[in-house]
Amino acid sequence: MSITKQELLIAQRVVDSCGVDAVERLLESKPAAVSFKTRDMTYFHAGSYVVLDFGKELCGGIRIITRGSDGMAKWRLTFGESLTEAYSTIGEKNAMNYHSPRDFEVTVPMMSDLQYGQTGFRFVRMELLEGAPATIQSVFAVSHLPSLEKEAEIVTDDELLNDIIRTATYTLKLNLQNGFMWDGIKRD
Image 1 (spheres, rainbow, N blue to C red):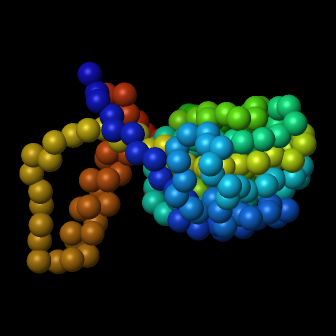
Image 2 (cartoon, rainbow, N blue to C red):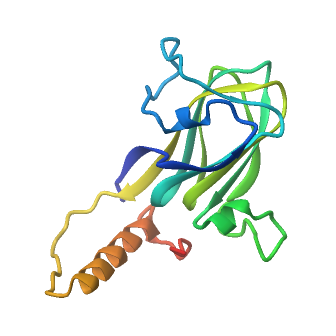
């Protein structure tokens, strides 16, 4: 049995956006639940989008906390380990959803706290495809890593080699999911 630890992360930066009001508010720490006290919202209009960078490679998805829209809002979510992948469309330049969906459409209701995706990513592109303007309170990355006890550590006099070892260790953790070694996260 594999035990995983779940961590919520706020985006480190907005890479790109179009037609989104108060986009910088997606970088603020807010309650991880729908809150009527939180006033600092981000507003999307049909056709608007944002590309968020969570600052490191993750295995998991995103959690979208909404406050308002008239009815259901239809969103396209595109996850990427690189910016190129986050901007790619299925079918173009070999972009696919083979191992895990990384580009898909979802319907997001108002006053909701829902999680989407289970893939390797650092970047996510969120586009409001149709529907009335939508109010987003927060977007969190939800990281799933196995809870493993460190049994040993390799440290050398060469700092570059130490960085390579740390990166390899983290990549191994990213690929250990549900008690098995995945072969999906590429670490572009």
